[in-house]
Length: 110
Length: 126
Image (cartoon, rainbow over all chains, first blue to last red):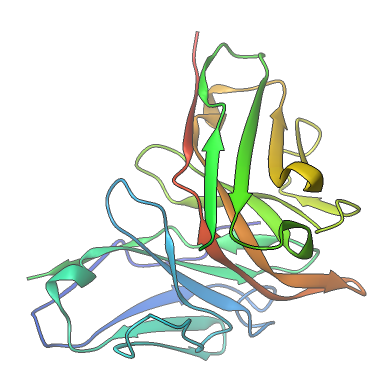
């Protein structure tokens, strides 16, 4: 299974919105509504931010949202805050009982 | 509250073996699929393996099939990863995670990890 494609970096100023893309194929992102997003601060474990494309677990701020169009999923962070600076990873079901992650995007709050 | 605590990592020579453990608490362990996910130093996440709540079904990434075996002991609320024929490319932090989803009829549904442990570092080097 090939990793999903994410931009290596993204940035925005406090209060702005930023979108992180996650591109796969019709065999993973495009074939299933099972995309999830994880936030990882340096030296910490990943934290679930979005699941099933656009659902938010309790406790995750509503500044975080998700969407999908075709083979590309997106994580949108609005009203950027300093604590949002972290690495973000997407993941998708890839068929045949397998899962695949993206390469990760480093989000910088300017 | 859900807690996952990994242990068993360390330095091992190429070709060697290691067994990782994950102690779970705060939820009914046997009701959930569990997973191992790894992260090489400075790299992204890679799914390794899933196991059904009963232990009856296992799914693994092609990169570890035939070398790594996931297992669980529901009486001890513990998850394991037996790693054999280790290679330098297996060097990574290994995370234990609770998998939310279920697999039946040739596919899996939901497919996300809602709780993660802090990880244990495995270094494969001579």
